[in-house]
Image 1: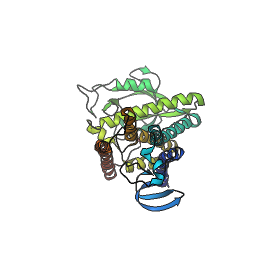
Image 2: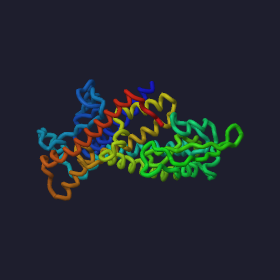
Image 3: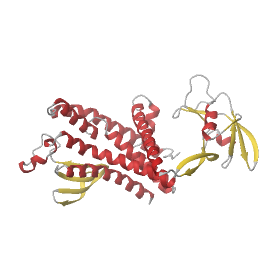
Image 4: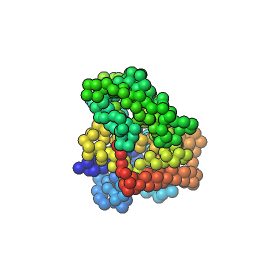
Length: 359
């Protein structure tokens, strides 16, 4: 059942993305030939009016085929006026931008809804998760309440900062042990005691950690305030996604973190399986926003590539030769294939090895 819910969630993201293109194309008068979930060959198809609706065999996305998106294709004279490249630039931009816009709006609605109805998570100072093999596993127990670190009292953020103040000797490397131990005052079974552990450097977050997580409680956010919090959260996801993609080109550790379709589905599936419905829905919101961001990169065949060339045509004052766009699309094609290949390779490695981890 959890696999079904995860796959259904991804299908919803794809269908809504393509539905954005579809609805916008219909609204501005373009002729839509096909609306498909997944790529050909088609396993199922049905025609309603001038549009064919289908489900493909290759579950790597979906597409909307609009008449005349290839300037070199032969278009019947009776529908030529409704073809893509016969439309003014603003209509083309609206149609192409509608897909990513739907993903952005979906992410916003989900995140806003979580703030309003579930609430914003605020960490307590009680230990809820201890990662196996980490320094915390040697000295902490679930349910311990951390009172202070090195004598410093405060909230979870203050305690994390105190732990992170312990550094490795010289240039830190992933997994290196801090030169000094963190002295942790805990409350266990009603009694205070002090334990010590050496934090380890985690390159992914660029600071030392003990390998545990604080428990959280949720505080609901007023609807108006939730709007600002949602936008702030989405901005962080956006900058994080762009930064992560940029790091792929120069950081081998970053490449290992990329997940493909299998990995992303697996993580969402685990959330449903473990009844972490909120986490699963949050992941879908993040994936929806990330899908919009990646699609807006200015390279064909991505949506951003179509927008880029439409705007370039407007600035230039005449159509861009299709040959030029084809040659430039090699960059986008290589980027998409590279991300897919890295993600798939990592997914296979995880399936063979330690599996996919939610934390």
